[in-house]
Length: 215
Image (spheres, rainbow, N blue to C red):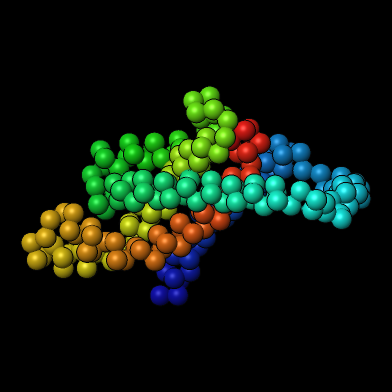
């Protein structure tokens, strides 16, 4: 019995060794590609202190304008997030493999992948051409980008639910929509709210970045 156990453990460890070896090879490959140079950071770190010192003392002479622009940033993030949530709720359900067949969730997942892979700056420049300079272009950019992220997170939450409550609702003769409303939504709502709040926080930061292209 001890011999069999040792052989089983040995069989499990070989794939682990290979996996860790490949991981180290990838790290080495990425080290050169990223031109990692810790000594340069250590040698020239004083430049960062000089640059940061120029921010102090802060100038509050135009504080009214600063406050106004800060509020616009929050407004852009708020609307971009809300629009994304409205779209991500149905998309997250449709992208879940335990809810919809493959010919529905697979194409939708690929579209969401595209939304996530394209930076919001690219979307911002695209919408600036359509609607002109201003906050609205930033809202649209964050809407598309955030939809790609939240749809994936929402779908993963749906795929991790306990099927018991859904089966219980189904046993009452409920429709597919009622199964989702009463069997799925109550289970995923806490996670969905957490994900949405996190994305709003991230979008406040992103809204300041898309403003660099006039959005």
